[in-house]
Amino acid sequence: MDCVGIIGYGHMGSMLVNGFLASGALRVDEVVVASRSRESRDACAGAWPGIGIAATNRELARRCRTIILAVRPREIRGVLNEIVSVMDGDEQIVSLAAGISLDDLEGLFPGSVTRVVPTVTSAVGQGTTLICHGRQVGMHDTLRVEGLFSSIGDVVLVGEDDLPAATILSSCGPGLFAAIIDELAGATARASGLPPDRALMLATETVAATAAYLRETGEAPGDLIERVATGGGVTEAGVQRLRERLPGVFDEAVAAMLQRYGAVGK
Ligand SMILES: NC(=O)C1=CN([C@@H]2O[C@H](COP(=O)(O)OP(=O)(O)OC[C@H]3O[C@@H](n4cnc5c(N)ncnc54)[C@H](OP(=O)(O)O)[C@@H]3O)[C@@H](O)[C@H]2O)C=CC1
Ligand SMILES: O=C(O)[C@@H]1CCC=N1
Image (tube, rainbow, N blue to C red; front, side, top):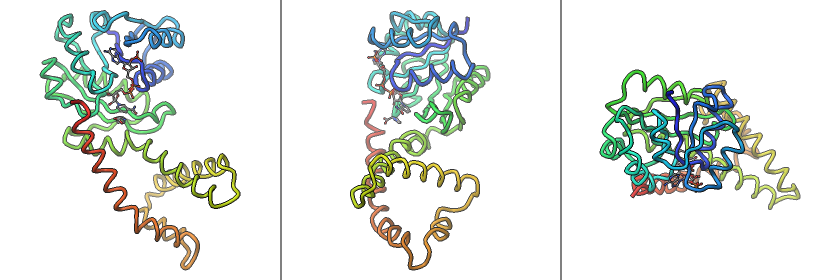
């Protein structure tokens, strides 16, 4: 059977298992999971009775044709070296690891290799998964992996050169926006009598509504600001402060992320 194997049942591995199974893209008897700790394997077996659990990564590699590597970048080489000797060579490797290139992956497994960058927001059916296929990926594997990840959200094909920047936006983005929501809510609560949980609820709703507005209207952010910020009014005072400071802050944050991206798998 053409089982899908997932190595690493952490944040991404568990989200993918939940997403593929809850969406009906896969049945429990089509999924095999391996993870380093007994605790993670037991958690998976408890959450999804009937799912395949492999005691070792090599056992998973013997049972599956599509193998998703959901371990941290620095673990990728060790895991691939471990499983490659039991593989036939016609499997498809799907790596989620930020910063590990197709060349690196194909150097370890000279076959069908795809890089996929999921996003945590797929847990609620929102957000974009980035996909970048290697040179050896045939039509069957292309359709298989794109179909699978379409079951948990939008899929966008990206050239490898654009992957770091696209990853910052679509995959690191939820973390960045969560930090912004937290800071805005915190500052408002500190400066007023508004309870922090109410401030957080209002800030979260407003960010969701603003994103929906921009997406549905296609309006440019600058035009929306002009619509909100009545001349001489309240918003204008806040936007002015942000416009002075934020470009520098965001330039620094993006530079730090790009630097880390290049170093994360080493
Ligand atoms: N978090 C995110 O939003 C995103 C992450 N990614 C990428 O996804 C990958 C996973 O990230 P994330 O889920 O956050 O990381 P986590 O640390 O949450 O999960 C990693 C998992 O890998 C398991 N693991 C570690 N070593 C091995 C091994 N040798 N064999 C089998 N399993 C092992 C761990 O097992 P155990 O629990 O059993 O100890 C753990 O469950 C990374 O490469 C990251 O770059 C990509 C896009 C988004
Ligand atoms: O922060 C990280 O390294 C991972 C990759 C993209 C999102 N999370």
